[in-house]
Length: 361
Image (cartoon, rainbow, N blue to C red; front, side, top):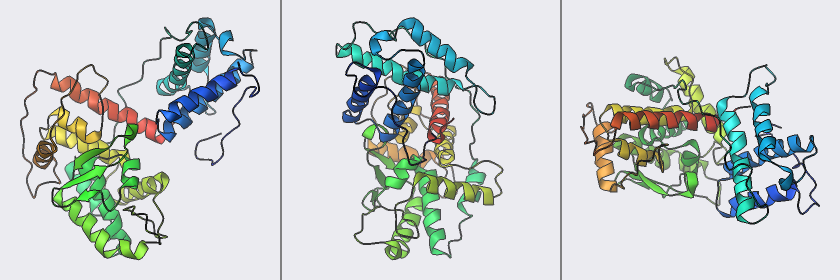
């Protein structure tokens, strides 16, 4: 069953067997739920574990104690050789995503003394493809897309404000949907992203131009969209409801299609564009990392925390939409890290994020 169908398949296995795979998986999913994993992550783990349990049942494997290292290696080979309906193999990213929850399951079972040894402890995960095609807008292309909405129309004002926020801040689609009217700080030029990925809050700089469009929308358009009681969510549909991920993705894609830009549009395109243009403008990788809300960038480098005021100054100096008519080249010190390598790692991480956001069969 595909995601988004609105209905979850029953989880396989014998729910009455207290020592079975079904019970083990349910307990593990509850464990990560109370640890505040995101609903999307929990749903993905559940789907992957359900596929694994079904495969095990077909081979008479019904309990965690029946799962050995050779069994897991056989399952990994199964994923490698499996073909989708169009005859293409599962990508390395999909295979990786199917195996990570299994490794987490058995780590949990060992830690809680449900099994004696972890059969997945030395399981080698497939290497995730890092060199993925990326769609990044140039400054001219970004401006072309931003200028598509008809700002003589109320909904055009709303859409221009949304595009400006995505371009200026690089926040995720889910984070843009969750913004409230209280999250913008016009005086300091900041927005607060609440419960982003990992349920962590962060403060992000936003350009004066983007704030101006948000203020115009909030003053001229939003009051007519509100359905009482007002939830405070910033961006509303014509019916006064919260935007959905698909709604926002479709909105962005349509404006890219209607522009002169010959690229496939998505919310993540603006996230990637923001990071790329700031890096090209001379921003230190650490500042871009903090704006994106990344804890790490698949490296062992530990980055220092930077003050919001400094981060705002760097944003103004390197983001093309943050200053009028000019782009400053702020040459930042590398402070002993390999800037080129870390920059590439950041862009690769954004590519993987984009694939995770859209999903893959």
